[in-house]
Structure formats: C-alpha cells, structure tokens
Amino acid sequence: MTTVLPDGPSGPRVVQALRFAISRRHAMERLRRRYGSAFTVESMNLGRMVMLADPAEVRELFQTPPDVADTPDANLGSVLGPGSFFAITGDEHRRQRKLLTPPFHGRRLRAYEEMIEEETRRETASWPEGRPFPVMPSTMRITLNVILRAVFGADGAELDELRRLLPQAVRLGSVLAVLPVLRRDWAGYGPGARFDRHRKRYDEIVDVLVERATDDPRLAERDDVLAMLVQARYDDGSPMSRAQIADQLLTLLTAGHETTATTLAWAVERLRRHPDVLKKLDDDAFLDATMIEVQRVRPVIELTSRQVRAESLTIGRWTLPRGTVVTACIALLHDDGELFAEPGRFDPERFAGPRADLAGWIPFGGGVRRCIGAAFASLEMRVVLRTILRDFVLEPTTDAPERAHSRGIAVAPARGGVAVVRRRPVQPTRSSLRCCTSPSA
Image (cartoon, rainbow, N blue to C red):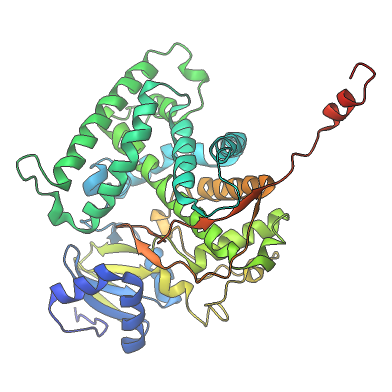
C-alpha cells in the first residue's frame, strides 16, 4: 500500500494545534488558501488529521462503511460515557440508533410542537422591551426545558436539579473534549474533577428516574424517551443497561440543547442585520429557508470526523493509512463559492422553492453518523423563532456583526445574539370580542 496524503504545514504539532485552538475557522481558511481543498495537519488529541473541503470527497467519506472508517478514538464519548452515540461503533451503534430514532421522527415529532411554543412563551414573557439584551441565555433555557420534557416527560425536583446541573456540565464537557489534558484530577481540583462530580450527581438522578419509570404501572402509556428506553429491547430480547440509558440520555440532553440554542442566537444576530429578510418571515417556507441559511453562514459545529479502521482508505485523490483521522470541514464547504454563489452574503432565497440545492450543506454531519436529532432540532428552531416573531417585533440594527466565539465544541455569537424587541399588541380572539360586546358587559 502506498500512502498518499495531502500537503500541509510542517511546523511543530503544538504550533499547529494552537492555531486551531485560537480559531478553527481562520486556521482552516488559511490552509485552504495555501494547500487547496485538502490538507494534512497535526493535532494534539487526534494525531494526524486529513481535512477535506471538496464536496465529492466529503460525500465519499460519508458513504464509507463504519468497518472501514468510524468515529475517532478521541471524541465526545470521553465525557459523555462509553455508552453514548459518540463512543459506540459498528453493530452496537446501529442497534441503539434503531432504538432511538422513533421519538424524533413522524407523529411523535409533531406532538412536540405545542410544548416548544409553550416553553418559548414562558421564557420570553419576561423579556425587556426597548433595550439591548443577549438572547442566548433564553434560548439555552428554552431548549434545555424542551429536551428535558421530551426525555423525561414531566417536571419534578430531579428535573429542577438537572436544569441547574446540565449547563455547567455541558460547558465543562465541551472544553474537556477539545483539551483532554484538563481531565487530570489534581487531588479533587481542576475542571476534570468538577466534571466528574457533575457526572456522578447526574448518574444518581437518572438512576432515581429510571427506577421510578420501571415501577410506573402506566409506563406503557407514556411517550417520553426515558419510558421508551426502559421498555426497549434489542433484537435478541435484551434490555438496555442502566449505564447505557444514562449515557444515551446525557448525549441527547447535551446534543439536543446547546447547538440548537446557539443556532437560534445566531439567527437573531443575522436577522437584525437583514431587515429585508425579517419582513418575509411570516411565511413558514421562507422561515425554513432562513434557518437553513443561518446554519450555512454560521455553522455551530465547524467539522466532523472519522478515523480509518481498515488497513487503508482511498478517498478521491488520497490513500490514507489505518489510524488517520479524516475530517469534513463543514465551515469550508458552507463557504465554497462553487457550491453557493456569493457565499459571504446572507440570502435565504438561495434555499427557497422546491428545487433548493442542499449539496454541500451539512450542519448535521452525514452518513450513519448524521445527527439523530436533526429533524427535532429543525422543528424546534422553526417553532421557537416563529413564536418569538409572532409575539415581538425584532428591531433591526446597523451594528457590526458579532464575532464568533468558541465554546469548546460549538461556535457562538460573542455577545450572545444581542436583541432589542417590542412586544406586539395582543390580538383579541373571536370569543373575547363576543364577550366584550354582549349586553352583560
């Protein structure tokens, strides 16, 4: 076998890793300008990485069978647990994906719409009018409450504690996944030790909730994810273990929370700077096109990777040896002028209409590792933004765009998606009009 790798920088690994740590997007753009649509870099925790920004080669990567290339050894599974989607591979990944797909598709998916609207209105009821404030803390609370209700089905003391615990754990986990050296426990101190304490308490809470669900005589009537996992059986009739349930629930709670909230904050940031787009958002189809464009110009996750498991993998021009981490550069594809005309321009019209071309648009990844909650996230973003725009006027601005800020894994608007809003007048319903015009009034 002859290895054929793309060219890349020859500097020390620590220097290359530092450039990516400062700004992944700028580092990738600089390397593409110098080396073209594929380049090889050295990273601290993933070793040698071949980064691809050619759509045909990325498509080929996503079509590669998991026994040839699958999730890297170093991934979010190191913080979410060995039973999470990010850690499991092969047949185990396929089996658990089959179990977890139903709650996030079809009839069950549509049933979440009312709940999402309810949580949005509950959170936005206290929004200030006429003065700037960041929306991201609100979108974080909305998406966290939504996913908690979808996963556990009801409120209670345990969910109140998870509302406090999970944001801290997610922030720490995102940093630890990128900088695993911080996982070291210095006699009970440091970020790794703090995360371990959060995880221990999370496991204790979930153990209580699983026990309660198992003993629930009406378990079969419940439609939350926890109830479904407790009742789920693999093809051989065996149930999921408590540890598997805890890891998968943490994966769903994490992945179904921060990325969606961050994209909504970017949507507010983009829309305030494009009042022409704001005027058209009363149309659901155009609203969907707008969210697609937000995810294109401001992808929250900028790359997704596989690791070569076979002796070698040939993709397009390259032959990669076992162990090589192959990365699809989401941010570079979304900024490719051959895929999207004037890629720096925010233009939802490019995705409007039945013939919209989504080639090269991969905010949820692709292949067997594509985000299992993509349909749920898309629904949630649509309903949250639609509800906000029904209840509020979002004031345009001529301020400079908010810069991107890395939160470890996700990339967020540095100021949290600053908004200025005015509440719309409440429209009277037909029943209230009848009441107010009756003789007894």
